[in-house]
Length: 120
Image 1: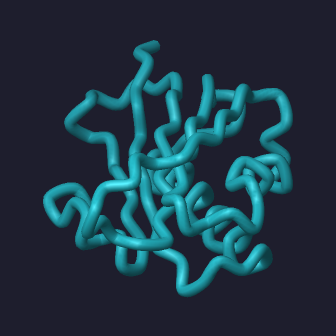
Image 2 (image 1 turned 180 degrees about the vertical axis):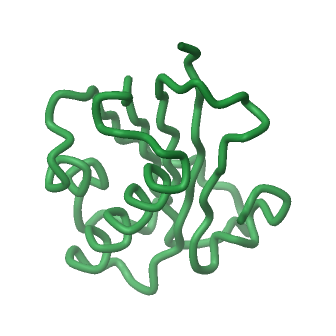
C-alpha cells in the first residue's frame, strides 16, 4: 500500500462558523468519495486557512464527520498580496493502492480557479 497526498480547496462566501464547517465537511466528503478512501485509510490531514478566516478551526469539521483518531493540523496560509480571499486548503495523507496519476484532487466553488489543471 502506498502513501498518497490528496489536495483540495474551497472558497467560502463569508467568515461564518456554520458556513465554514459545512463547506469543509463538503470538501472532505468529496475528497474521500472521489478517491474511494475510508477513514481507516487516512494517515493525517493538514488544513490551511487564509488570514481572513477565523470563525472556527477547519479541523473541527473532520472531527464532526467522525474522523477522531487521525492527526489533524490547522495552519494559516501565507498572506500574499492579491491572493484569493476566504480559502481553506486541505492536504490529506492516505494509504491507497491507486497510482499517483489516478488521485483526484478536489477544488470547489471559487477555489477551482486555483488549479484548473487539477479540478475535476
